Length: 289
Image 1 (tube, rainbow, N blue to C red):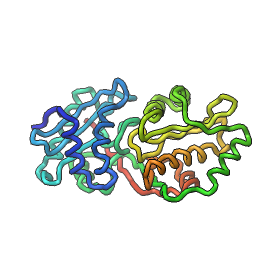
Image 2: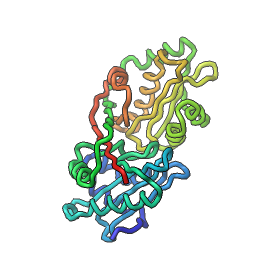
Image 3: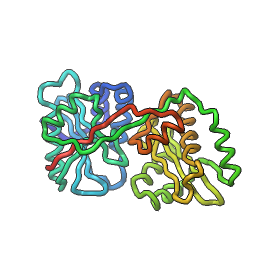
Image 4: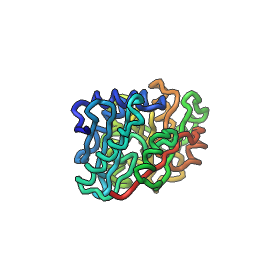
């Protein structure tokens, strides 16, 4: 029987045993608590089978109430091949349908998410999606930055910006509202989660009291970088590269060997700026309810 989850620790234990990739299993407890602490007003649910062998988290899109997400589905290795994954997914679909959703996706409900979609290396999850009638709707990727390699020209770039009146500093609280005015609520929420939290941070580039760009890390987990944005009027100054390197330096100081650039967009930029490489590929599955 599938029931509502009573204790987050139960979900954390299941996820830690079920997730196979080092970066996921090691952060399972953090992921569970992060998903349970989404943006204000987010409608969601957390279900577990009564034996404590599997768990599923789901929520309604913050932007489209007709779209639902299955954010996390984990089954202990010892309980697999018994149909439990299908039961949990079916229960999540029923709950989303009852909440008014007309479509469902497997993966992240930005801005608070665990992964953009299904990591292609989780073969069992891919098989389950296909079995339950999901179709491939999109592809996303993370890039990995090697934090053991420090940039030789980071200081030079910061001095160059200073020479044209641009100062790089830790982001003040009002940065969230500035981000909201250009990029919307999602990135504003992530920036708000990055400012003043252990294992997270945000930097801005400022000239004459005006914010030109920002970069944040740790909003969803300490080892992930993003989001980052530059105001249209400041494009071409090179503030993005400097802000990126400031964040990665913090993550290096926090004893991370690598940083994940989540849901990475401009591949060429990250490759050139810090030698980042595409490493994790995610398939975003969806279907009508």
